[in-house]
Amino acid sequence: MTWTDRIGRRLKLNDLHILMIVAESGSMGKAAKTLGISQPSVSKAISDIEHTIGVRLLDRSADGAALTVYGQALVMRGISAFDELRQGCRDIDILSDPTVGQVTIGCPEAIASGVLGAVLVRFCTQFPRVVVNVEEANNLAHEYQMLRERKVDLLLGSITRPFVEEDLDAQVVYEDRPYITTGATNRLALRRRVEVAELLEQQWVLPGESILRSVLEEALEARGFALPKIGVKSYSAHQRISLLATGRFVSADSRSVLRYNGAASSVILLPVDLPIRSWPVAIVTLKGRTINPVVQTFVDCLRDVSKPLAIQNWVAAATKGEVVVHPLGQSQSARSGSTHVRGGRPSDRTPHATPDFG
Image (tube, rainbow, N blue to C red; front, side, top):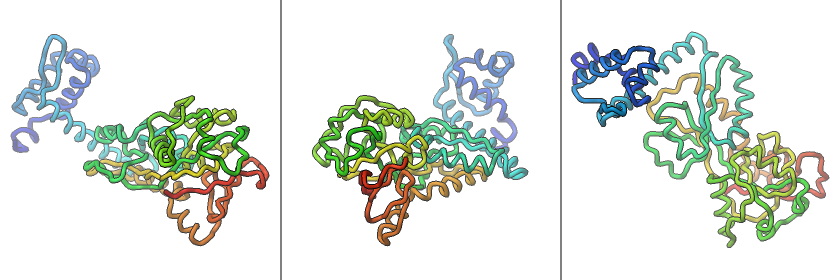
């Protein structure tokens, strides 16, 4: 296929757009209604593009129209082509006014209610004319298609090691890990040491399938225990923290949520000896896709806000005996591990917790 024979002079973007709408709606009639044109006009556009390409792109039937394998290939590339054109228009807007544009990010609820909240406050204050769209992506490994279909500019969440998605690029921002938590009125809250067996007697509230739950399960198995019976399964960090406040539940919450979610100010970290590992949280983007300047500015802001979560900061401070910031935001000696819980509780009644750097 040469450019002049089949693309440059004869393949029309409008016809390709009509084909994509037919594929999405499942019939020419529905596509015509969506586009606000007649069905014969849709049929002619499809016939023209099939004649130009030289293969059948749709299988027609009384039930509607479905893409052939050739049609699927063209539509997939068409999605990329239209996305690049949209990116071009957005880049032109940004070049004429660098404070205007939009960013679309996909992330789990725990990140949306934690570190991302702090990022949004700073970013939207500095760039009030940029619109940030946050899409739900609770299990990042299952949501990579959002990037491939160009529904988001980037994904933010936990990744596996090694990262094996050849068409995606992952840049680690920080390391996260869970802490065993409860409310201030729970009977374990004032204890200086809590045995694992005692935790199993508690009512637990945990997310469903997640990296946090998997890491907790690994740590318990290393001590010869199974995952405890879960009283409430909830992806909502806000809901889990609210249930902890009743004093009737125990949970595991990530360092990023505990540090950046304001509702976590009354959460107590329980001093439990568990070999808990950390996991990498990364910005994932599509290889070969141009990142526009506004998205890059958002990424820079994200990196800056999340610096306190960078694990190397903790390790460096620990080797020097410096004062570092506890996951909840309090100061603590990097060597002593003594945790001072917010809310004015006396330090001599405060539980001890030693961060584990995995």
